Image 1 (cartoon, helix red, strand yellow):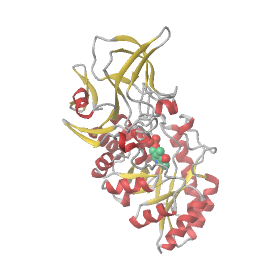
Image 2 (cartoon, rainbow, N blue to C red):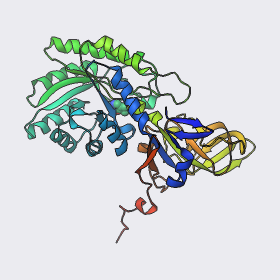
Image 3 (cartoon, helix red, strand yellow):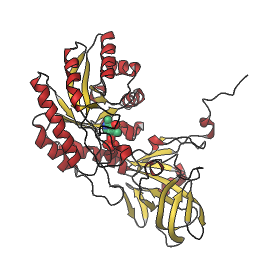
Length: 413
Ligand SMILES: *Cc1c(COP(=O)(O)O)cnc(C)c1O
């Protein structure tokens, strides 16, 4: 973990964050390259000799520098769109290590993915299977496919990030998957590769994963009886991280539990949050302090448009001072942004000693942070910096006011 205090200063690896602020300004995302690498390796190394591919879920943080860091150490990628595909290729990712997930792949996206030679399409409906088959036929090629099954297990996570229940839009009912595999098997334009599931995100216990795995393995057995050989098992992402004080999953134990169940079968995992979540922080500056009889508000320059998770999920992020000081006003602060919405907060009731101009670090912001940011309230999107040891590099420049409407036209009638 690279975000730690030395002499009351919060560091990103070997760089004091306070020293970055005059250079890059606030608000700012900061990522630790070492943490990203170590987090990916903790999955990769846990599998040891067992055949596997760790496909980083690009949607968690799709900055080119993040993707390039992972491509260089041999990562595969899980993508959800043509945009993510081009990002991975631009960042030096290997097409043969890309799995293409998502419920609504367009014909153009399927064609491009076939042309560059992705490893596998994770198929989420029979209509999508037909579409992939038609595109493969038009290119006179074979599309590698897995069916994403919905194992109907409760991931026991936030309902907005649970995907493996029957009521969710994702995947194919496990009972219907057999039919789909049989029609895929018959097609000369489809090549059955694997079986896939992804039951949700921020899952903090192993049990739901293993419950899903058992159901998937039962289907693998059924498929075998029908003469359909599945070559890999993709168990998706979803491994939770510590945002507060929650116990979460030990990756080594999780991987060992998988290996114990799957025999020789190669395994693909698609972790996103677990790779980048705690490898990034969001820095924001205290603008005004506002106290009344009931409440203490610290109004900061970062907002829900920059970091949406608190507003969207009521998510908890730890908030730490960039410099620990003894001055300031000690109170239980609600840390709120300038956006005109009551849900515009980053944290509530945090005991901190604050003064105007202080910088605060919102921890665990490396995943589903910048990627969910928007220009709401005509706020330019913030800069992103990557730190490695004593080095720091701008990996996305701050948007300017003119960037905001550079693609718009006046109405000319
Ligand atoms: C979101 C997603 C992931 C990554 O989930 P995390 O919780 O970030 O690990 C993996 N696979 C699919 C199909 C996804 O939609």
